[in-house]
Image (cartoon, rainbow, N blue to C red; front, side, top):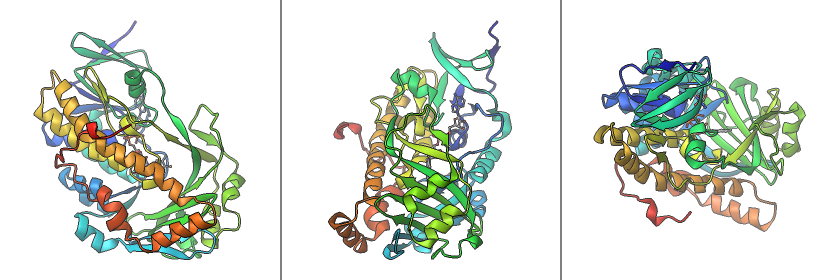
Length: 409
Ligand SMILES: Cc1cc2nc3c(=O)[nH]c(=O)nc-3n(C[C@H](O)[C@H](O)[C@H](O)COP(=O)(O)OP(=O)(O)OC[C@H]3O[C@@H](n4cnc5c(N)ncnc54)[C@H](O)[C@@H]3O)c2cc1C
């Protein structure tokens, strides 16, 4: 027999207590709306190492009251550096540090995901988070949404937000099928104590080491920059045939793309035993982010490849706009609020999505004239002003009047 659970305080249910879901709960609370989060895992333990958070997102944590707590466990990057992966030659360097904070009003943090989740869930309060609540399906009935859970029970809500990540079940319910596309690249991730990286120049900077077969991105994390988080991206395998997006890997696979690279690269990648390979998947832009009383947020709406480091940041931007529109609108009839939210967020997130796809191409070009032209252009570029200000300097609290009708795709 199906049992019916009740949601206390509120009718807003957020599916997924990840970065987006937890931040949305804080954004809603700031506006007097209490939400209940349903999380499939039995404890809030983030997988996947660390995350870099830029000012377009970190500024919002001032507003949500957790900036100082997060700042304590984060490292503000000193510089943004691009290097030739094999020679180590500097291709471009832009200071980040204090000038970044002055320019954008908040830091560019490297933070351990577990720390981020600890601070956010502490601020939300565990009484609002239901662990071991895996959602298996949704149904609309009268003016309610019926949420099926893996244990056979059922829950009813007036407004449902699908913040359930890149493999969102809520997205599938809205789109009707799974629309993920393998990007042709996969990655290995790891965290290494900074003191072990004796070959690494600029250990407290965010750096890209580029080459024809792959690239390595790393940045410092922790309150003292005591660890370095890396993502090593390769152009293999050509096809992704596994059902899972994270598969078992042999430790030696990580070296294939980086043989003969600079010792800083091989030392970093060699410092940890790798047993997983992550598929980097693309999601095509969605025509609509909502259906009835259900709306998408974060990766569920617009999962990105991670080459601009913007997936979490875009989820956090979403939270402000969705909370504002829900508070402005009518929770009993949320369609207008959903439409306003979607209109404000679609063009922005599509632009960042497209830019993220292009970055991988620029980081992995064949040797020869194409690489020479790329390197010459890089030397002339102020990466913060010329390439990143439109992303990191974006203020989601201002309705910029951007409407998706202008964009093809
Ligand atoms: C290799 C890699 C590196 C990255 N680096 C960066 C970076 O440096 N900066 C950046 O901004 N982004 C980065 N990203 C992207 C970032 O991780 C995501 O964009 C971000 O986590 C999205 O947040 P979210 O809340 O939308 O989803 P998630 O953080 O994935 O949270 C989804 C939550 O929903 C839960 N859930 C899922 N299904 C269900 C269900 N059926 N029922 C209940 N709960 C469910 C999950 O357990 C999870 O807690 C990276 C991604 C990858 C793959």
